[in-house]
Image (cartoon, rainbow, N blue to C red; front, side, top):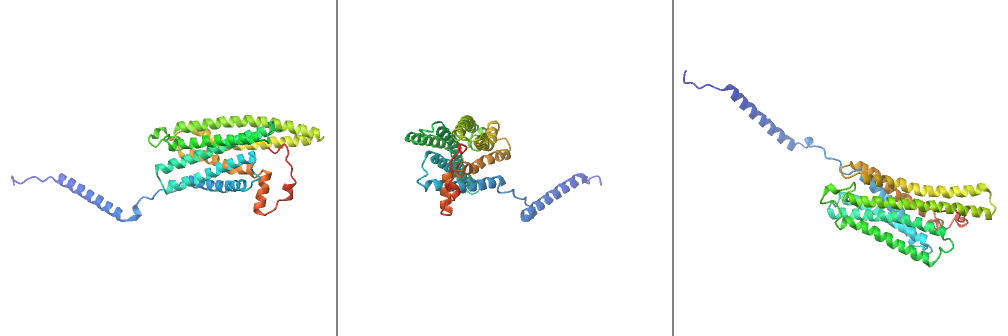
Length: 336
């Protein structure tokens, strides 16, 4: 009995429990690999915000395509004002197409090249849209300030120069991310809109604020001219003071709606892109970018469909006739 070895029951029990635990883990892993019900649920494939942006882009494209076709197919709509309205509609049309392409490429053709091309198109088109709004403001100011010499070859030449400058500048801004000024290689330089860099969006935002200040100053001058013209017409035709007041108030209200809509749509995204970067939640970017796209939906209503000549052309296309209310209407100082 003295030569019998001592049995270590505690060690045997520990080894047995370890082996049993390992076997249970192996069985659980095998079962989970064979039973599809225990797999984790996949995340939502499509971002709802992207769907909303794509829908907005579709509406923008359809609406502005109508304006472009009307101006393109009517030789009578070749005045400087209509050229600028056509430029605005074309820019917004390209912006809408860019939003649609961005959605398609984001979920079907994901690559660095497609991302750069898409963001370049969107930047160029929205830049051309804002620049066209500024050009329209300049044209309206010149048409009132130089009313006697506005309808001349000099005005047409100046309009073409503005169109070349605004589209050339917009195309250059759109080519910047494509030519290498992007954050695909260095994420720390990204802005709220990838793959644009923080410096790129800062330049775009500051440029917008400058153009907005210039538009505000021009519209203030336009408002003064409209009030003066309305007063002179009232004196010449012996209108009542109330008629002069109503006409002036209508013109001022129209200018306030135009400028207020522009600021309400673009100012949130402009200010947000100046203070935020890629670390901020993307929901803030979507929430401020979406109203900016709405500006391209509102532009045709303000600048194109309110115009009497475009209304006549649209009626001829739709019903083949011009309503008497349009044919007898005359332009007033409030139609700015």
